[in-house]
Each structure stands twice: as structure tokens, then as C-alpha cells.
Length: 505
Ligand SMILES: O=P(O)(O)OC[C@H]1O[C@H](O)[C@H](O)[C@@H](O)[C@@H]1O
Image 1 (spheres, rainbow, N blue to C red):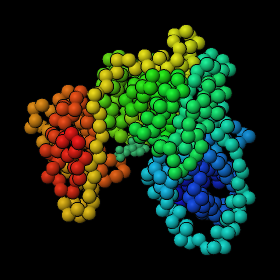
Image 2 (image 1 turned 180 degrees about the vertical axis):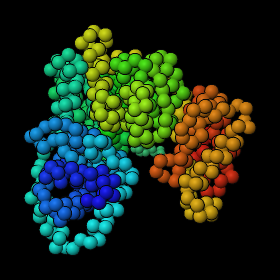
Image 3 (image 1 turned 90 degrees about the vertical axis):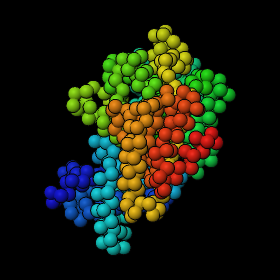
């Protein structure tokens, strides 16, 4: 193999396999989409064929059926000979909360999920191989791969580990959740397993759980804790069933949120506050890394009430996780990286962003509080976030950049967005009521009028998301007007959402 091939983690895996004469791949199918399924096989076939041609070795593919994204990463770490784990690589097919026709692939090795550069590399290689593929060679590979496929129910192993974690935290009690009523809302994504395979073995009553059957058309609500309709549906289920706790997952279970018995959400800043309280009890003084749209109230809560350090970084779960790993590397202890979107990863769990594991930490708290007699029911959790100041008004407005507009002068939407942000930054300095955040890693964050705003470039879309939080609508509008004054001369920016907001519509 040429040196350049080692640059790609996939090829590094192949090299590893070359040495070990066997290839194990778990393929997780979240919401089954046949076309995509074929695509994955095509991709695997190409890699496989490449392998056969170069090394003529024997490989094995493990088909895992319905799974969650975190479970797929987990399969690269778990040791279990019966299902050939740890596997060398895993692929998850998922559209996340997006419509079913936006399915994609997530690749994992035991070093974590592959990033943009790796994926680009794989696709470029796959395209070259695809171009040179003859029908006969394809058929030959298809046969070879079919013969190498084994089926395994990896989810059984993954969920058994979650169950074990809660039992351990409660002092090795078989059913530490006995008597607790907990409802799950899987939003017709892949998270339904949490009811039957985690909560019930732990003794919880789960009646009233809803939308557990996978359906990529999401007939009830989008499985997304950031979606207001989704959170309303869960809250309603908790209140109607008089449950102690409600748990909601996004489609592929890498995100989650909860609702207490009174219907109050543990979502966004409140979820981060809860998880910070849990983690800081175990690791006093540790640094909590979050995304950029977290509130000033959260910083005050983490630093003044919990005695931790809040490191508000950038949006994007991978950014947040990578930053926490970096901090530990340079000697600053961090045990939690978490986003307002509901993505959260703990150092103790290999920095894997796992919505189910976040909820396991919450269940641990419920179970251990009862065992120690320090509290019962979700009030234990609600009390933990007592003192978190929450803004009366919290909005996110997404301002679109028209990429075809003449004002871009042929440039990219990113350059245009950066120019908007630069202009806003300059304008702010001349307003004595507004102060730029002294430490900020993304976009323009400004405090004033008792609140704050952040304008930044979206990670993926030609959009400038604007978050505003303030103690009243009047003050939120003042912040909105300051932004509007600065951005109005940018003709390619659609400010209609902001216009409506400042007009109180
Ligand atoms: O930048 P935005 O458009 O708001 O999107 C940001 C979000 O993108 C994806 O959904 C990532 O999974 C999230 O981690 C991230 O927070």
C-alpha cells in the first residue's frame, strides 16, 4: 500500500483487517430505506472488491438490523466474542430527524465518528472504484459479500450494558426503578427499545409510552427534542398518565430530553443544567463544555451554584466533544460535553454522544436517591436545577441568505455571512448599551437590555441563525432592532423573520 492510503481511516481499517484476515462491519438500519440499503452494500462491495483484488482475504459483515447510532459506535468498543465484537468499523444508516428521503451514512471506528474530511476521502475513492466497476465484477462481489454476512442482535448487548449501569449505580439492585412510572416517546424513530429493553427490566411501569413503532414518515411528530410539538406530546403523555418522568429521543437516539412529573421540561439549557449538576456531584470543579447558544443564566448556574466552569464553545456536537477532549489533553479536566440540541457526551462513556446514556445518568440519579433516602420521584431532578435563571423570552430566528442574489457578487454564502457578521460587530461598538461578549468562539454575541443575542453562521445551511434571550418581549425587541439596523443593508439576507419579530407579529 502506498503511504497516501494510510491517510484515510477506512484504509487504515482495511490495513488492520489485512493483518487480521477478517473484516467485521455492523450495519445499523434505523429506518429501513431499501434504496439506501443497496447503496451501502454497493459501497461495501467496492471496498470488499478492492480487498479481494489486493489481498484475497476473508471478511465478515455483521448485519444488525434496527439500531441506534450510539449503539453502532459502541459495537467498536464492546468486547463480546459471540457477536464478533469489538468490530473494526460500523455504519449507521439514518436520516436523523430529517425526512426519510434525506437518509445518510455515519461511519464509526473505535476512535469515534469519521469527520467531514474522512467522508470526503471515502466518497472520492468509492467514486473512482465505481467508475471502473464492471457488471461481472459487481456480481462476483455481491456473491462473495452475501456469503460473508452474519446477522447479530447487537442491540441486546448494548441495552444489557445500559441496564447494568443503572443497577450498579443503585447498589446492584435487580429492579431499582420498581414503582417509578416512566413514559417514553420515540416519535416513531429507533428509540422504542428503551421502554422494553431498559426501563422494564429495571422494574419501571411504562404504560402511556407512545410512538414506539419505527416509521420514517413520522406520522405523529418529528422525533426531535428541539421540536416544540414533540415536547408538547411528551408533556401531555406525562401529565395524562400521571407519570414520574417522560423521556424523548431523536430518531437515531443520539439526542434526548425529559419532562418531570409536573410537566416541566429538561430540555436545552435546563437539560444541560441537570446533567451538569449530576456530573459535578461526581467530579467537583470540572469544566462543562457547551455549544454557543447556551444562556448567561446557565453560566451563572454552573459557576456560582454548582462550582464548575462553563466553557461556552461552538455549535455542533462534534465541535463540543472535540473541544472537551482537547481540554483534557492540555490538562483542563472536563467530563461533560453537551449541546442545547440534546446531544451530550461523557468522558466516562468514551465521549460517545448517546441520548440513551444521558437518560441512564438521569435514571441512576432517580434510583440512587431513593436507595439513599435522599428523595423520591422526579422532584429529585427538579430540585437539582433549582436556581437556574431562565429568560422570559428565548427565540431563534433563522435568516436565509439568497445564494443567487446579485449582492453576493459571485462569492460564497459563507463569505457573505462573514461580511454581515463583521459589519454587525463594527456597529455594536458604537452603541453604549451593548457589549460584545469578552470570550466568544462563534459569530457575534452581545449582551444588553438585560439579555443577549448571538448571530452566527449555520454549520450547514446558507442561514444566519439569530438567538435572542431577554427578560421581557420589549427588551428582546430592542436587541432584535439593534441587529436589524446593522444587517438591513445586506440585500441578499432575508430578514422577514426578524422584521415580524420586532413588529410583535
Ligand atoms: O448551525 P445549525 O444550522 O443551527 O445546525 C447546528 C446543528 O447541526 C446538526 O444538526 C448537528 O447534529 C448539531 O450538533 C448542530 O447543533
